Length: 68
Image 1 (cartoon, helix red, strand yellow):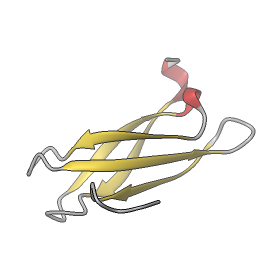
Image 2: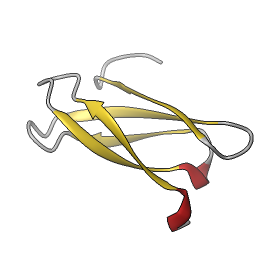
Image 3: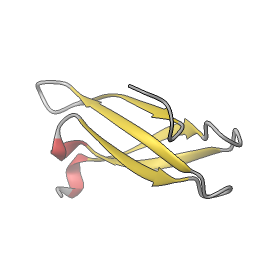
């Protein structure tokens, strides 16, 4: 992990609609991971999209049963 590639991204929990800041590591390139909501603890799918130049482009959240 490269600290200069860490970004915060404003997101909303797909379960309880809580807004929070997610710390995203763009050094891994585009990837999928899981995070738990800080309020309701539900498992959230996190899909990180990074450009070919290493810039964070988008973060998409989904419920555990969503298909991306």
